[in-house]
Amino acid sequence: MISHLLELAAEQGPAVALRENNEEIAARLGTVRELVARNLGRLHNEGLIRMKKRALTIPDISRLRAELDQA
Picture 1: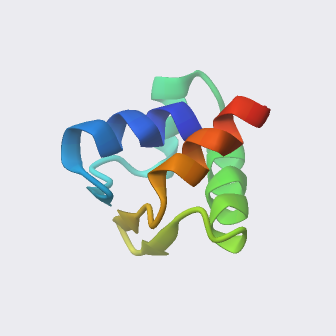
Picture 2: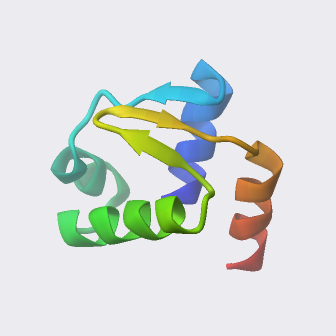
């Protein structure tokens, strides 16, 4: 999920417009909708992303990238 968000940020910048719903993202990533929702919720709760409907902002891309490196 984090890799996907970083790819979107590389294309769109830190303000990402999600064009797919959670089910479509899950299909793209080879997982299930529930895990996408859970991971987006966790990233939001940890302050790594901000979400408002389909608008997602990554306040600190290097911090999100560090989270990927820890996984």
